[in-house]
Image (cartoon, rainbow, N blue to C red; front, side, top):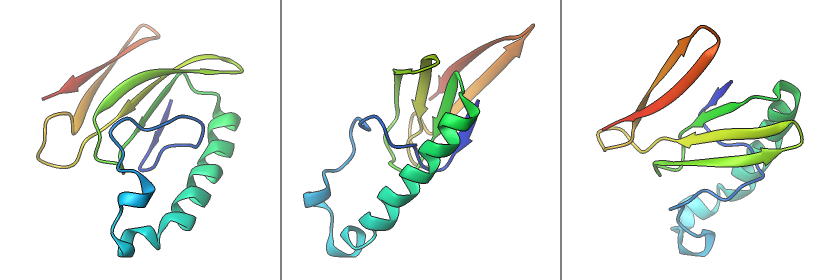
Length: 102
């Protein structure tokens, strides 16, 4: 399992504001953001998780990403105070499930 603020590079973030629509102050941060996602991709490949949970983009979503080692469930969390900003991770007998909390 990989829990991080940002998401590794490799898949599109549903609901993410397009780069060209960002205000100039945030647009200036894009190079650092993309660089950070590439670094997280290296962590992602080293850890080979079955689950990734991240925030940063204020977009609640769940998807499956097919990695070289198999399917990876990806859960993006929304911003504080909104539906989808939290999730519950249940781990029992080696089996896990993620449930968004609204």
